[in-house]
Length: 226
Image 1 (cartoon, rainbow, N blue to C red):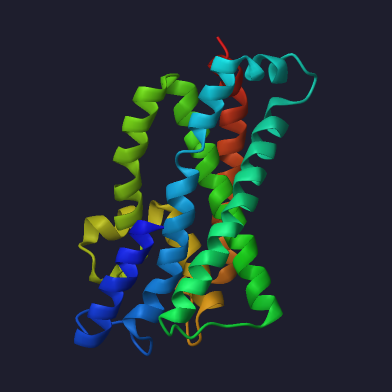
Image 2 (image 1 turned 120 degrees about the horizontal axis):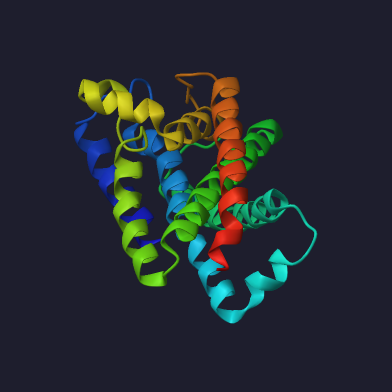
């Protein structure tokens, strides 16, 4: 939660100085979905270390001898990570409410936020699991995880509009799944928020990337136990 708190503080500063153009939204309102996505990302990206611990404790081998499809094991872990991220989402909601962010409380908007948070967390937890399957040691995993989190976060629309980025960074942002997670959250979470790509596109990208990563992780997952 500490990085999210610092982002809120910076958001309040930028809101007062109007440094970043965010249209009709105050900068703090604009950044609130990014805070929520960042909180879920930072937890999910280190989810793979749990799989390494399971291997070291002998739990992973028990999973692998079961007849359960490997993709089902991966999706089960991803769903667990997504549900756990909802607890953080509640804390972030409480934090941004205290900061005066104008949130949407309609049931359909809240349901959409839940779906996007679970999907995004599942996506990045599977990505984390793939990294764990490739590096296989806790030390290497922690190093790679820390290297990846900041580029993923800053190469997205979490804290500034894509239109402000250099052309090459705009391309990276549109290839970054976190951009679509934040885009959907921005439309569903804050009053006056709009989506740049469309909620349907955001959900389709998150679902498609999650499915593709799940298939890849299902092939790699048995190798972690060797």
